[in-house]
Amino acid sequence: MGMIEIADLLKADTGQNAHLIHIVDAKSHDEWLSSQPARVRAALNAQGFKPKGYAYAILPGDTAEDWAIVTCVANRESLSSWCLAKLAEVLPEGTYRVAEGPDIAPALLGWLLAQYTFDRYRKKDDAPKGARVLLTSAIAQIEHAVRLARATYLVRDLVNTPTADMGPADLEKAAEELARSHDASLVVTQGDTLEQHYPMIHAVGRAAARSHAPRLIELTWGKPEHPRVAIIGKGVCFDSGGLDIKPSSAMRLMKKDMGGAAHALALAQLIMESRLPVRLHLLVPAVENAIAGNAFRPGDVLTSRNSMTVEIGNTDAEGRLVLADAITRSAEHQPELILDFATLTGAARVALGPDLPAMFANDDALADGLHSSGKAVDDPVWRLPLWDGYEDMLKSDIADIANAGDSGFAGAITAALFLKKFVPEGVLWAHFDTFAWRNAAKPGRPKGGDALGLRAAFALITARYPAS
Image (cartoon, rainbow, N blue to C red; front, top):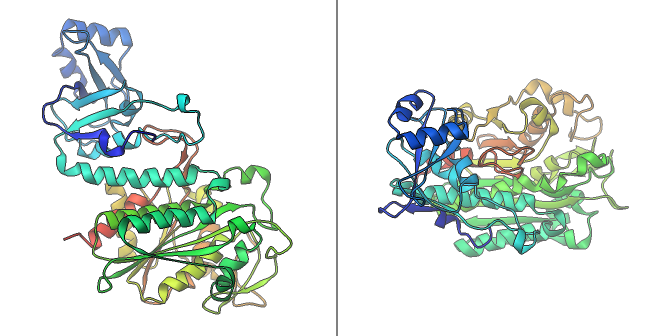
């Protein structure tokens, strides 16, 4: 976000000069209004203020500099993450504090996320300037909110960046920066070694230009004696569909097909910044699904890292192939928990829309924990079933399994069932089929790349492995 640091947007309230923000809801509005002086009531009437969601108005003070704000929320006594986000987008540069009343800790994150901008490709004089600083007495919550915002900014930046500047090598650089910042180890496998040991990752990415050569990125952090947690992210930096080419309209947003990798990197950052007692294993299979004479073909049979053979029914079902090799690699270290993130299927968006990630899990308690965690942190996810009855859709006449069914039915479920084949028995696993994008802006959530499911996953991991 340019020269403005995220941490500078929240400050401990020690009595600094600041403009007051009055928060009302439909129930409290009339009583609050009756207590205001005539000049305030006149100003609200002139501005047409009504107690509806996200409505706000400027209130005159005793002097020209002593102005304040009133805003309306759904429930004054139980603020959501987004209650103050609209204000953080529209108020003039300056310092603010919430007047008497509600606990604003839940709304701190929205204040931070609302001030995100992606200005990498803008002229410097076009870039937004200034910052809205919020003072808060919820001092203990500031660091947590800043960490979540920083991780969300990372997802947004990575996803918003076009593929020319966010190919497999650029994802590797992002992982390098993360490893360097947290004294983690990084191993990158590519070239002949990748072809030999991770054949499906290699097959999907081999048609790309040399500058976008496929690779498996692995970061390891934490004490070896701590419980091992594997975080995996689909890093398809652009998806043409391969020889089963997408129409041009469907390719328009395919720079975001590495959104799973962005989520995995951000979650790893959160875990390491929070010093959670886990042995973290981050895996990002990074490829571009391109078209060339050496592209993998419909009808080909690939041999995966775990020796399972896969018949290619559709080269546009490539994400599950690279994830399968990465899941196999993670399982070799006997993790206690595997979480994977992927912009995997359009079927998940048809079923649940853009805002609600589909979540699959091989354990009911894990699924319940992710659902409740997401609800608690305003980052909802919705469980879809790993319905074994649909495994027949992935049958192949010549190989152990097909990568895609022929019917077009249950696309999100069959993709998850494919991944499940590579998860060992007894290992907890959850899969997020996330959109990683917002087609329309909402307060605190601009159009473009976004983190969907990230905070839910982090809340669950924090609950399972609390920092001492």
